[in-house]
Image (cartoon, rainbow, N blue to C red; front, side, top):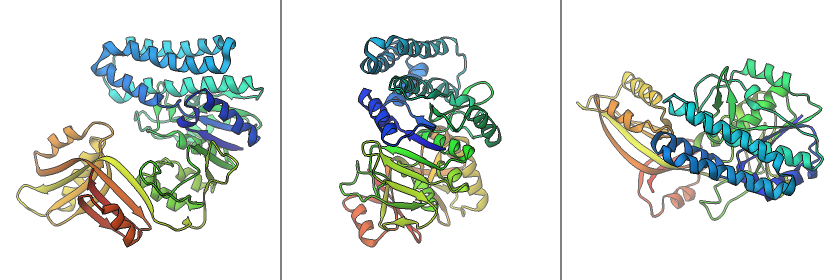
Length: 416
């Protein structure tokens, strides 16, 4: 049993879907789990629709039509005169979106988000499944919402591992090939999601529950690089990373692996491969038990759109454990992700990201008791296995607002 995962960039158009089949054929992947993300930038398009649902409803109809046409165009290119069958599948899902928009009465943004944005994965896997069958590869479309069971914490749902293991084992026969959706899951009544970019985690969940031999994530890069090639001109391919190092890198924000992906794989010592969907026969990067990093070079991770926040007592009293506990309680309440912590005698500083638009409410709450200073739109650079030269290179020509160094890691908060 193996698990393959293809991200949105790999199936962004008709050629991408054709290439997916080519990869399956080259690697002789005829049994296991195929996890596929939404096509191209469709998750962004559905997210825009959710925003419109709350703030600009008159634009929703045009957005839905644009999304339907995007998928039908790909289907037309793939199936030609035979595209009517998949057109019907697309129409069914689009009608579900329209129906939800009309009948929903909930004002919970996160609930609405999960019910709407999840449709992108359903559309993608319907098209890919039909095209794989067209190429005479036997495959079964699997509704992941019936497999991965979670609580009702919408947009960051927590997996119920006992229920999920039972459901997956009852749905999957290890002699067959299945295609299913990444990122989404289900509770007793509704669709949930596992967090943005959660398709990698989906693959790891299936691997854990099925005691898979390995997991392979196909990306638009050769493997895990020591830096984002969109940000840095020169990058180095990492041949091997330990589970521990991968968790560290994911925690600090390395985008190539979802933060939650490694833990279930580590528990059962299931290796993870990260490969290029354009060159699937190349080795790529292996994440496994063993050396932390090979080759051992500085690794650079960048997180943009951060907020640097400093909190102090209005009377210049010490910031004590009870103050820090209360601050963290507020951060949790307003769903603000903390990426760096630093404290002194009279102040407590954090670098955070506001994925759930809770920062302004947080500030209103915290200002009643504390003095607050903050900088929006800063950048957080993390250097794992740093050298003095790597620190100097990153900080060159930018205003460094905060620097923190531990044994293996340096973090710099800088103006963008």
